Image (cartoon, rainbow, N blue to C red):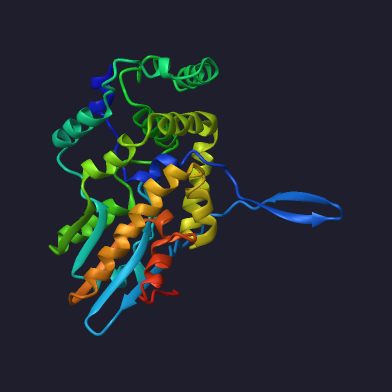
Length: 313
């Protein structure tokens, strides 16, 4: 059973596994002595215009673009300033370049199969196991399907299943379109991380953190598809702060937050700093969650004295 899951693994850059989040964003308003929560769901615009930033010096330009790694077919976002900036670039930089499927399967096999001999469900408390098995049953999956695997891998796959069933397609992510255009133009393509590194961030998490992450996914999976709809709408409207709140909803655990977001942003900020010493024009596209909040890539670059400007269009 483990081999079946591994051979069909859906690997996307890391924040995608955090999509099991609240379906709407609630703002609190005052009503006398009582606080009243009002729901303000985002509405998908007719013309998506995701946020875009730029860094420039005398001979180097780096565009920063936040991506969504999986979308529904038919969404048009590659136009106007995004396309103009991309067309002006001579290098595309993304989080990770996916290898050949056979190579990817081997990497996942090496990392995702549990090596302790203890099944996944036996690692859960009685209450958490009951909730996990009920979720598997609701999804139409054998309750033992993930038993030979690490908790992080089960969490990643569980968070993706509702999205795929709601019309999201594995080959419709922002990176897929950018890569197609980059290859058509034969420009340089660079990955900030290797597949081993990306999966290693999860695989090296302490097991108790992995289990908490899995439990969070189970607890919020019924809201995953609606949550993703909200994320995509906020992204399409360039509502950066709201998008960051939604995308990082699963990162309340300090270790998760630092491992999956902060530490990677620190590494990428150093890459940008060094890249600015080389001439050229770069289109840097990373998960939109990395470009929002107090630990965003832009915030870290600003601390280095690098000016990041928002492109309004």
